[in-house]
Length: 163
Image (tube, rainbow, N blue to C red; front, side, top):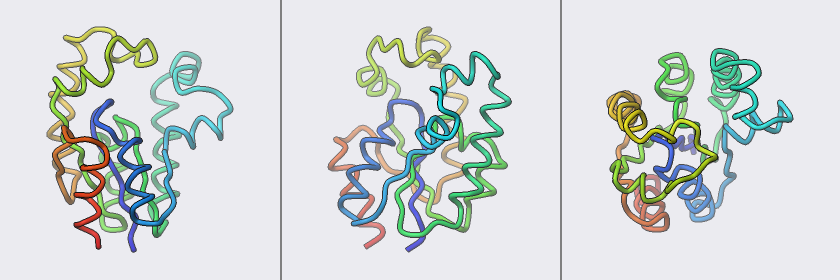
């Protein structure tokens, strides 16, 4: 089976749904942000702070190229990964890209006042970023799934597509 790549805004459920989907499908779960943190030995927040976004995006692109040919995996991408055409190009046609389309209201409920999400400290800016990215996720995706459901229900719905 070609891998299933989950994309969507922060808080859309990519990691939680991804882990659940991997269990259901009996395959490996990979989180691209976790891979970057493991390989760099520091948190993404620290990479942004010390090396900048461009450096992080290059690391992210390298990961996308490496995971492109993987089979039988469920892969959760970072919130910005699939907003860059070079990452979409690396994965398109080699994996199944699924956009978890969660509403901004549900995302706000899930994230709350989390300090671990620097891009979410200003809700107005977060909303503008959400609006900007949504069409990019839709364009990148092979499948669009309602991300407002529970993680289990979302994972089961995705699994139905690929069984």
